[in-house]
Image (tube, rainbow, N blue to C red; front, side, top):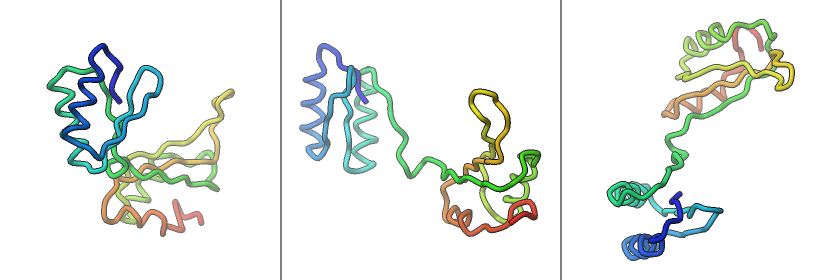
Length: 134
């Protein structure tokens, strides 16, 4: 996403000349630049940094963690126990969080697990028992 400035048109022309497969879309005060490959994404980002253009980058899906929700555990289950049990089962756990009701901040029996995206990351969907509960 690139901030609209006085010379945004020249910058977009330069990007479109170098990378004709990109698509540009205006969203408010920003221009969303969508690339077809990760190499194009990397080169466009470095050129925007070199030109000192205000922008921000959305992480590609391949680098984001996988998020899984676990339901059916008691609200008193410690997050550390869930994380330890999943690690013992061979899951590359990044973070475990217990969700809360927004207004009252009371803990819900719902836990969100973030798993590192790796070759064995799909194993999290095969786990049937967590903390000796099915």
